[in-house]
View 1 (tube, one colour):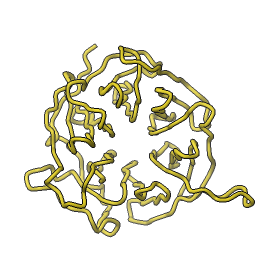
View 2 (cartoon, helix red, strand yellow; view 1 turned 180 degrees about the horizontal axis):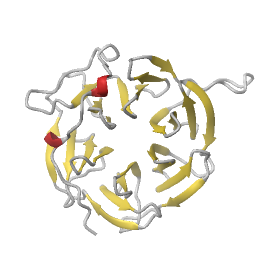
View 3 (cartoon, one colour; view 1 turned 135 degrees about the horizontal axis):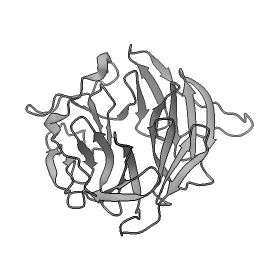
View 4 (cartoon, helix red, strand yellow; view 1 turned 120 degrees about the horizontal axis):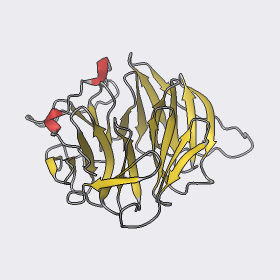
Length: 288
């Protein structure tokens, strides 16, 4: 099956922040060199996660604190209460966030292997993932369901917002239909699931039922690939390469239409690209 994803970085077609000004939050925000896309914003020290047209999430560099910012610039700290006051409080390690249809925000706490749900900035509930995950690394919202990637069990898990498993697939291997250290996941407008694999250095494509559809990116990706964004508007796949300090735009043959290097083009304090995020109506956000 031919996975038709093509396009160029200059064709992102993304608006600028949907009216949300991030200037007060990120004094270290800088513009890219002249000639690069005006729709790319670059941050240091903190990670900005574009969730929807209405909300963004800010995580600190350690993932121990999270802030919700709405379109008016109002902030709310997302804190999980200590349910057992007799037990010592332990800090979360938030590595990913998503927005679900009922206006809830879901944070993935990697160290505790759980999902924390917040609504309007208030904690609602947690879902324990420890019985079927070892190293959850990413969460992705797809309609009314949530995808979770586990790089240790080499698997992808789909569940509803109550924690009921819908589907689960993945088995360690290098051949077609196997996964090796998956690190990120996204779903395209046709409902196909794209999984970025560090171990196999490719993007594998699956149906919602877990049937292998194909793969791409083998000629361009490295084990340093970290983040995956599907830009359906331009029919392209964007990936951060943390080793080469490059933003790649991939086509179905695994060639990069554009490799946008950041090493040497930005201030010295930006030493390592680590995060890539976008949402409808938002810019492309990169963090270091």
